[in-house]
Each structure stands twice: as structure tokens, then as C-alpha cells.
Amino acid sequence: MTQGPVRRWLRDWRFVAVEAVTSAVSILLFCAGLVLIPLMIIPGGVLLLPGAVRILHGWSDRARRRIGAYRDESIRGPAPVPPDLRTIDERIQLAFSPATVRDALWLAVDAVPLFSISIVTIVIPLGAVNALAVPFYWQYAPVDEPVTAPYPVTSWPLAATMPLIALVYVLISWALIPAVARLLALISARLLAAPLRSSLAERVDALTLSRAAALDAHAAELRRIERDLHDGAQNRLVSVVMMLGIAERSMQGEDGQTVEQLHRAQEAATEALSALRRTVHDIYPPILDELGLEGALASLAGRSAVPCTLEAGGVGRVPAAVESATYFIVAEALSNVNKHSAATAAAVRVRRREDVLEVAVEDDGVGGAVERPGGGYAGIRKRLEAFEGAMTLTSPAGGPTVLRTELPCGS
Image 1 (cartoon, one colour):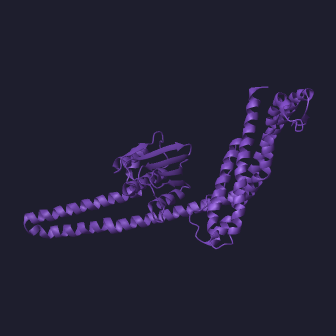
Image 2 (image 1 turned 30 degrees about the horizontal axis):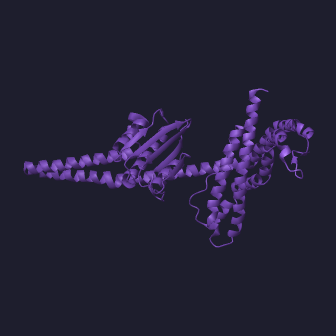
Image 3 (image 1 turned 90 degrees about the vertical axis):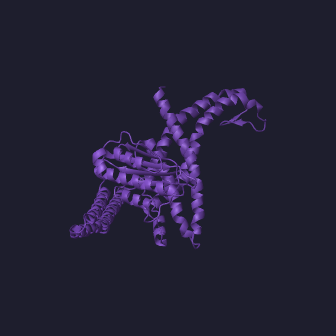
């Protein structure tokens, strides 16, 4: 018997044992779901649906990762539950969506038949251990309640057969446990994996939403640039023209007045130039071209009012759009830290994992940060949606506040 098969068998047994434990949790969730169903007829009971669906999807996603690791494959799960479900129709539609029904069916199967199969399977090796131990304790059992493993042991000759029974248990376990492990993984994978047509439809929906978010973000950016140019730089340039005209007319007067007017014109022109530079910077920061993403983020961290450290080694160059989005995400996050966190220290960590750029901004402030419509975090999420990125905000009362984002950065 080589070491390889033994390790594979132990891996299979461990998988079945873990499935038995998780199936026990599935039983509790399944019972909770049965209790939740009657609550739907109570006014306000529908409000519980999004939270219940999130718990269901979260538990099934854990199973997808676990089954996928065992089978060395990726099992795609449903899209996250939208955070802003407002109408009853949206909540009911979510509860009866194909992804929710599929996960609920898996939960029911995992809670009853798979639990029974896994429990029975993992105790077979324990039967072998018990059979080997019977010769040492059978004589201490009461006469009217003899040890049964698997038949009553009432004499030393019967006790002497127990090693053979243990061998039978071992042979059964050796063949049965890998088969059961593959069966459990196959059933769960079939139930948890989205149908190909459904996956394609969800992908099309995701791309449609991503495209819409990109167009919305682009339109909003153009409106912001137009306002900045109209209300900022243009008005200042008009002031420059007017002041230069006054300076020209005052040339006939005293030299001191001429110098004063020209000085004011120069200040106004300087302000206009600064405003134009800020506007251009907001479109695409020139520092990204000069120093790259790491240098630009280092500049942001250095200008932060709250002392900020940066970890961004080895990121390298990524697409310009991703660099710009990452820069603005960190800038907005640090702006929130400086304005609202009351923190004494902040940290920005950027790393590249294959084709995903991960950004984390953390501070030790008072916490309690939330995502509000039209707020800075909502703007970050909308910017990420244009790239099919993801954002997670964790900010318990008392801190710390941690903003994590993921941006696809493949070429």
C-alpha cells in the first residue's frame, strides 16, 4: 500500500466528514426556512426575504468553493443580491429567481439525504476500531446485554473473530468512502452549478449593467467637467479680460494704479490657470503618466492630512483606465478618511493577483462609515461597476474602517 492512495483516502474521508458537519448546519438553515415561509403572509414579512436569500446564497457559495476545491474546478454562483431592493415585487422576484430556487433545492438535498449518507459512511472506519477493541472489554459487559459488533460476543472464540470483522470494515471503508465522496461532490456540483444557458444569460445581464454603468459614469463625468469649465475657469478668464481692459484704460493714469491693475490681472490669470490644471487633473491625472500608479498613489498618501502608509510594491503598469480608476478610488477613500474618520493613521495596500488589482484602504478612526446614495462610497462603487469590479466596506462602530476593492486589470 503506497502513501499516495492512503493520502487520497484520508482526503476523501475528511471531505465526507466535513460534508456531514456542514449538512448538519444545512438542517438548521432548512428548518429556519420552513419557519420563515409562514411569516411571508404576515404584513412586513416580505422584508425578511432579502436577508434570508443573502444567507442562503452565502452558505451555498461556501459549498461551491468547498466542492470546487475537492473537484479541482470552479463552480460559478449567482450574482450578489442588490442592496437597494425597495418594492415588494423586487423582493418576491428575488425569492423566486432561478438562482434562489436552485440554492434552496440544494439546501433541502444537503440537509436530508446527503447528511444521512455522509453520517453512515464516516462511522464505518470507527466500526473497525471498535471491532479491534471488543476482545479487551467484552467480558465486562452484563450477561443480559452482551457486546454486539456486529453480532453478540459472549465467548472468547467469538471475540477472536473480531479482527476479521475489523478487516471487513476496513475493506468496506477503503472502497466505499472514495465512492461516497465523489457521489456527494457530484450531486452538490450538479445542484449548485448554474445551467449553461442561465450562466450565459447572467453574463449578458452583467455586461449590460456594466455597460450602462460605464455610460452613466461617463455622462456624469462630462457634466462635471462642463460645470467646472463653465463656473470655474471660464468665469475667471472673463475676469482676466475685464481686468486687462481696465488696466489698459488706466495706462493714462498714474503708474501706481497701472501696476496695481496689472498685478490683479496677473493674479486672476494665475487662478484661472490653476483651475484649468485642476480640471485637467480630474479628467486624467498627469502624475500617472509621469510616475505611474505607484508614484501617483505615493503622492496621494504623502498629501493626506492623516498620516498614511502605502504598500504597492510589484504592481507594475496596468491599463490606463484601471490606473485612473484606482487613483480616484484611493483619492476619494483618503478624502473620506481626512474629513470624517477622526483617525490617527491610515494605510493603503495595493497588490496585483493575476489579472485582478486589489486595493485596500484602512484607517483606525471611529468607524460607522456607510454607503449613501450620491456619497463618496457610492461613487466608488459606480466607478467599479464600469469595470465589473467589486467593493466591500467594513466599518463597525469604534473602527477600524476597511474599504476593499477589486478591479480586473487584464490586458
